[in-house]
Image (cartoon, rainbow, N blue to C red; front, top):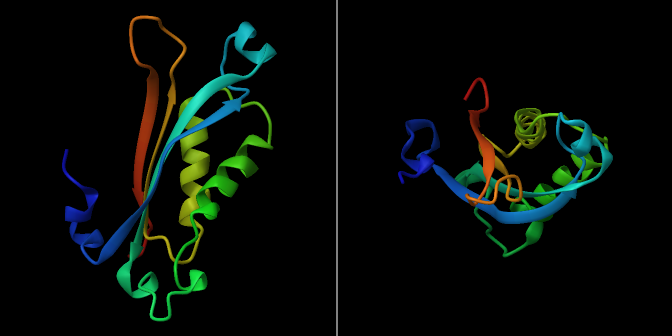
Length: 132
């Protein structure tokens, strides 16, 4: 797997990531999915320019806090039911890109309990902020 850091617009970035963040969320288009929560795994990669994420004094406010990713997911979940994983990752990507230090984002969601014969089904999106 090639790193997005090889992309010319991201060569001066560091990657901040959140792996397999397990959430219970109301998601799905089928009636049975609308009656309860499903387990979803979220993966997030944020690409942040080194100039905006290299601490000089070893202080948290010099970098993007990991809590930003978790809180953004929680805020989206609080908005209620979502039909599609595509909508979920698009909403999360837009919220992540709204952060002034974030240049690009890669987000995936996976429903691990849909089919018994595979690890899961999901969707992934990669976006670079316009004007970079």
